[in-house]
Amino acid sequence: MPWLERHGLTLAWLIALVATAGSIYASEVRQFLPCTLCWVERIFMFPLVLILGLASLRRDRGVVDYVLPLTVLGGLTSLYHFLLQKVPALESDAFCAAGVPCSVQYVNWLGFVTLPFLAWVAFTAMTLLLVACRRAERQNDPAQGAVPESSPGPAR
Image (cartoon, rainbow, N blue to C red):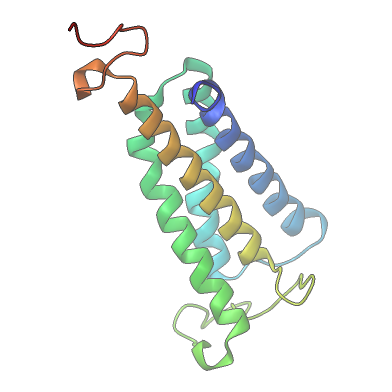
């Protein structure tokens, strides 16, 4: 997919940028105090703005191998945080013993859209984009055994 090859990293960077801006807006403007799991999600998200931004400018698709662990772990953390908010039986004091409880829902649109849900969507979208970028790169890489698109094919 040529479009994805050209714009996948940039789109992933834009998602990270919007998610980071939203996180900063929620805490600094709306005064929503982050819980422990919110901070963990931020630890996975915030560096992605810089890393994906630089990779996008340099068109460095090799960064995918280094960024995927951040998006996957951030997504798993966000999903767990969301489940803590929505499934009372899972609520635990293990992560949020001090400060704001992880079950607090500052936002609850449509009965399920919370801040951890939004973070999970962002991490998942970035993960899918990066996996697609990696696949597109491997399909077009002759060293990986793929036939270049301009090749006329085998002689008969």
